[in-house]
Structure formats: structure tokens, C-alpha cells
Image 1 (cartoon, rainbow, N blue to C red):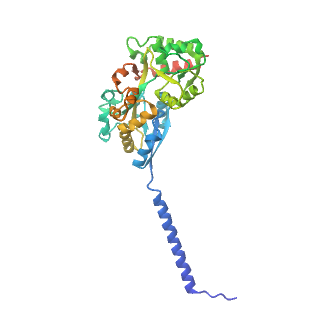
Image 2 (image 1 turned 180 degrees about the horizontal axis):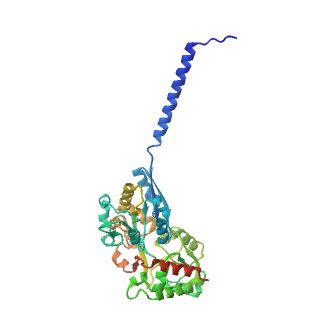
Image 3 (image 1 turned 90 degrees about the vertical axis):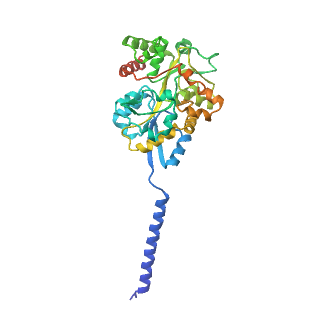
Length: 368
């Protein structure tokens, strides 16, 4: 059989193939364009509540980026990750006042260009004047929020708010108490022992003899301890499940439990309490420093600070946030008289002998 080849047919098929190829390339080009430019990703290592979608989405949309967050359970965990080779994994961190200075001293944070953070001048002057995050004439952190480590309690278990931290040692609360797995639990025991008198700064500079007494005091508390909590969600669950009736906690848990209609109370006992000033810093290893500085500016703005307080119930560093709050909200966040409230709080400081404190705390936890 003889086949005849029609030249016009061949030419037509080739033309059709070329057209189909062109059409496929065009579709692919449109598909690629619809994905938009490659997004930058800003990585955070922060405390719980500092990366809530309620205030992160607006930043992501405005700057065409993605913000991802990891959470830390203690200041020591943050420092360990930064020193352990993980610094390059994070762009922004939120160290508390007990380790902020050591992070700056170790060269783990980048100095800030404050001209790129115009809202910085609106922040509380008392917080801006702090030397915690300053070195060699440069500033390494933006004050973000501050607050206490209050005594939280189930209001159905107490006829009146507990007026002393010593209530935690009452034998009738065996197995019903929780403490934070963090050095601040040692500060609290030091307050019960009176080591903050006359100088609260002594809590961060305890002698060997005082540390031994603190250790004994905390070991005496162990029969009452249901669990040492490490995350805010863990303590919230302990209260919800009625496993504990009192604990050292954060206002974040108070806020979470109230939203769940749990009968939670919050108080600062007569001994006062310790607390923290959290800063936002950019890591020295960050590869997105410009975007990170834009993020710090966004987080310092009053509108953002309002959204942060809605989630955390922490006091904002920007006093202008008060203009966005009701009178009751201002009072609850102590913005009606912040200086007076601060007198009840001994803000964490750099602990020169932190390894020794850590050693003692580990001995407490491991004691039988």
C-alpha cells in the first residue's frame, strides 16, 4: 500500500503544534504571575500571645510577607537556642528583662536604627530610659509590654483573695498548687523569706547561704505541687481540669480563663511580686533586618498594642494605647496609674550568678 503525504496537511499540523506550545507557555506564564513575587518569611521566637493572628495578619497583608512563630517557655530556653547555633533561624525575639542585657552583651542582638522606628519616641519614657538594652551608645531593643507574675487562684476555693505567697505552703493544699518551671519561682521563695527587704535587688544577687535557704523552702513546698508548668496553655488546662487551685502565673492565663468563664482570680500578695519588661529585638544573625525593623515599628504602634493587650492582658509600652481603651480597660491594665502599680512589681534584672541559680532550681526539681 502506498501512502501519499499531503504537504499542506503536514504544514497545518506543525502550525497547530506551534500554536498549542505557545498557548501552553502563555497559560504557564499567567499561572506563575498569579502566585505573585516570592514572599519573605519573618521568623519569631517569642513568648506566648505575641504572635496572634489577630494582629499579625494585617502586617503580613501590608508587607506581602509571612510571619511564623516559635514559642519559648523560659528566658533560659531563649538564651540556650541563641547560643546553641539556632540564632540564624530567628529574626525577632522577645527577651524579658532578666536576660536582655546578657543577650546584648553576647552580641546576639543587632543595634537598631531608631529612625526606622518613629513610634519609639511615643513609648513610655521610663521604659525607654532603662539601660537594659543599651550599650556603647546604641539601642538594641524596643519596649513592648510589661507586667507582673501574679498569684492566680480559683475563686471557688478561697473565700477571699490570698494575701500572702505563704498560702502556697499550707498543708491543706497538698497536690493542688503549681509553680512555673522558671527561676522566678526562686525569687518568690526569696520574698517569702524576706530577702527583698530592704533592697528588692537582693533577689537577683542572693548569696550561697540564701540560695540554700531558698532551695530548702521550695523543697518543703513539693508535697503541694501538682505540676511545674512550662507553658501558659498548660497552666490554663490545669485550672480548667480542677487539678490546681492556686499558682504563680501570668495575666495571659487570667485573660484566657476569664474568656472561658472559669472563676479565676488574680492578685499581688502583700510581699509584692516580681515582673518583667519584654523587649522586641532583632537577632544579629537575621537575614531580614529591614523587614524586622518595620515589624518592630508596627508592634509599637498604639493600634497594634491595643490588639496585643486584648490577647495577653499585659500593659502596653505605648501610653497612647490608652486612647483606644474604655475606662474599665485602662484601669484593668493599670494605665490609669502605671507608676503606682509598678511599685508593687520588682522587675527582673540581669542575674550575675545565673548558672548558680539554675543549678539550685534543678536541685529543687530533682529532690525526692
